Image 1 (cartoon, rainbow, N blue to C red):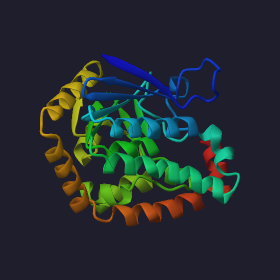
Image 2: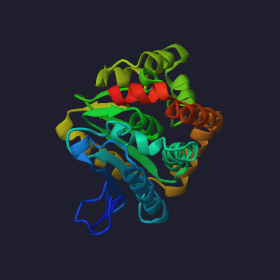
Image 3: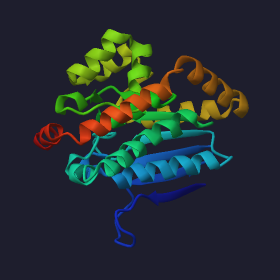
Image 4: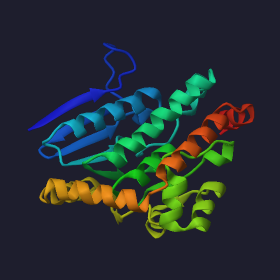
Length: 264
């Protein structure tokens, strides 16, 4: 039995579908980013809808794994730069936006559920950082990804300054975040961002197989292993996220960064 829940509507009662749609299927929560007309770019409705969907899954004892995926031609194209003016009206507004993005990282990494990302098409910026936060990240073999933030004077989030440095090494982490070059799925596998690659047509089936295999394992043991690994390997995550938050707020409020982002 499935239960579809639409979240993150721009306006109540306007007939639009939610920016995030959550579908519970047995032990699996399917969480779909649903702004395909904007390549699922991150606006406040999408971020809040994702947070709500993750919270619902966390509170549901029947859910053992969450699969995060995107509608249309992309997983998620990062920040919706058309909303930049709204995000930078004041330091408080910018801080609230960055906190909302960083809260998703905490929800993913502190959850007792296993969170699986199924990435196809473009996976950019904040969305790529969320993919790094997930317990398993499956890439379609035609996926493309990059960190654009430094290109227009902003900063990364999601604890990736700590996570990717430990996964890929400091030089590769600097290459990815400073140069901001666009990469293919094979590169994601090479640097440890992707767990496995699959043809796009098989991606969601493979994510489901993984989720079902996880659901067969003892729940407490799986959650304890997840937390032990995260707490041990990612011991500086909180410090990294605090630094990222300060730098990202500063970047968003910079007139130069705003001009670069608008021209991107």
